[in-house]
Image 1 (tube, helix red, strand yellow):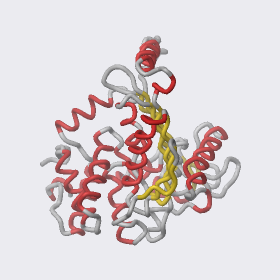
Image 2 (cartoon, helix red, strand yellow; image 1 turned 180 degrees about the horizontal axis):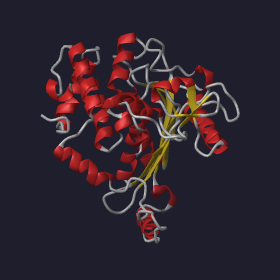
Image 3 (tube, one colour; image 1 turned 45 degrees about the horizontal axis):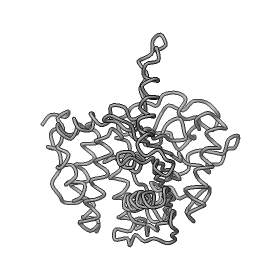
Length: 357
């Protein structure tokens, strides 16, 4: 197999599940988390997919992540709930929150479910796309798993990338799916560049001297920049209140860096929402109206030098189907890292040793 040859999706899922099981994760949970991790890569969120396996394994080994959590509902009303993730792998609590939010939306028109005691759970798109595919609107937000951003005008690292995502149904193959960090770049992108030995573009980070920082190996010497300056800062704080404080989860100085500290509970906070258009008398009309408006936007004449207008999530379904059929192509650095994990866990390497060397 050459370095660029793809690996079948089911083979990669099986490897990830084996690796998690080697750290004491039960078969059912390992299979569920592995499927979600690989799903992130299938939909093109490579910085939050199997690339994160090393971090998850480190926290399982260090005791900061509970391999056998009891996911429970700590508080509940007709339309809301808080799920306690019991320090388990974050995908488990977030998947449970998403499913419960959708169930409540069908019954009450809206479902809002918070998470406490969670961990990093991959891209938020995983927890909003299913709502749109089911004819619902979705939203999810999270407190970042480490603080890389100071409050606007300050110098103390008290905020994370604090992502937020939205989804909505539309006619055709692709629902509207918008997933973003509140920083100019997500830390996962910087870690990916570090693994590949590539520089960062200017504008992602600055050092404490205020000058651009482009070496990803020096990321600890500076901080990420918020989108839109004070606007991004305000949005990040709002997310921290909804996903962190409201759920009894960490925010601000209480946030634990889940990479450098593998033994402490992170008490990561997240939230997932589902909204049924039928509760507003728009059961069928919503998707049709949204599609008409999206078509208007796509028809807008591009500015000179710009590509045609595209909506968030456009083309993702076809790309995902192609990857499921052809397999996933992972960069050589990640192949090598996954083979290292396999050797450490005494399981079969997912890539021929010559290809990933």
